[in-house]
Length: 325
Ligand code: ACO
Image (tube, rainbow, N blue to C red; front, side):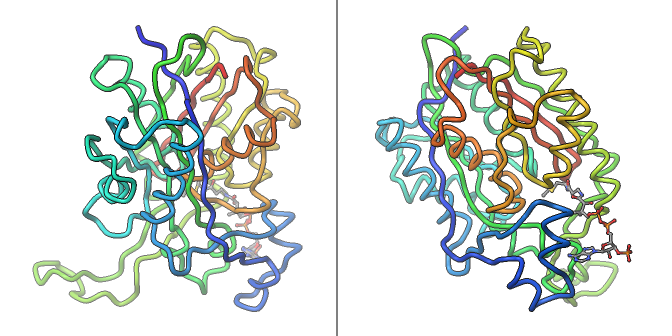
């Protein structure tokens, strides 16, 4: 079967920074609480840009780095849970923005695991020979789904986008995938909509509050640690490598303490884990996409390395991939 690998990476972060000190003026919180409980110092806010704008900018950079023109892209997949609107899809909006006129295009919804679900999906299309080159993007304007009066959630999230061009490679590439879902626990993290627009809805017929994210943080914390540790074990087994063979782990960035707990549970040195949550907070699907871009740029990932991507998020869903760089 065709080997499939990453041909180029890109990322885009909106310029507006919101620091913990800024948040101190908005809700009852402190820089000290946020830093010690999460590792976050600041996050980016898309004030005038939409999800599709962030996605298109990250896509442009990935194409430039891959040295592949947009008209050579056969497939665009955007992972997001915060699209501009229900439709058209973000992938179609990106197609228009970058002029990838011959590409098929659709979105994937798998919250913080979205980038890995999208990568794995795109890989299948290339492996089977249906398409040759795919653009996989993860983009979130998740701060638009936040109740900015709720200190439990408003300190955690940030906006951004990352992208990669996938295509056939002679050696290495994505060597294993692992996708999992725990739909029974979906209520632990969700977007709450109070009221409805439809006159046929049994409850209130007008929105009393804009939709907002609600979550059971402590319970999710434990499941995140266990399911990501489990996903790493399963995906490296599929890739036929051992823990000691892992050169770099790029995990979902929800909480620095979750990452520390995974490292401890698996007895993996934390230095092997790429962390940038301090700068961006939790960007849902975009977290791993941006982290992977920055890991390569900072030479934390080198040719020949075994790189493990691992995610956990609302759904609940978890996912992992091994990439031979
Ligand atoms: N500032 C100050 N105090 C706060 C804040 C805040 N921003 N937020 C909560 N607190 C208070 C609480 O009210 C509570 O006070 P109390 O003890 O008087 O009741 C206290 O701090 C402790 O609150 P906890 O919720 O127990 O704090 P915890 O240490 O668990 O940290 C956190 C909360 C950061 C949310 C953590 O549980 C976490 O990271 N959970 C996992 C999140 C996750 O992985 N989500 C899924 C992925 S995201 C996605 O899919 C889009």
